[in-house]
Image (tube, rainbow, N blue to C red; front, side, top):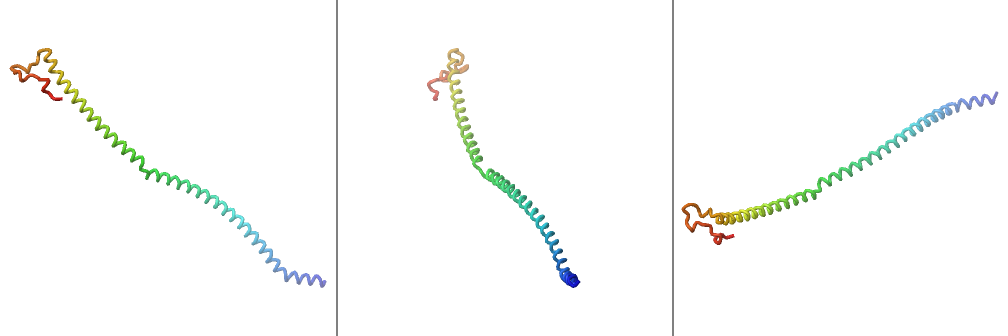
Length: 141
């Protein structure tokens, strides 16, 4: 009976401590479960952050590439040079066409008096003098 009394006395003294211990164990398990849950959330967010950073890098590279193609004026300069060359070539061709046209007209004018002489038709018109006739030697080329 003495032992039971001592045991009851010890139990009453340590009963509060045992209760505190159980409560702290429950709190610890709750904190550990929160930690596990929070850790999973952090891991998922880190994965998402990594994906977003990779996507951002791709977009940055794309924008940089677009920017470099927009600021690259080499194709425009080449086009301007090509247009200048076309203008120059066109002017040269127009001059050549003019020279050929003039040469053709001169040839036609030379040929006409010879044909008229052969036919005997053109002699300077009615009432014409000998001076009015076409002189082939007098026309400079």
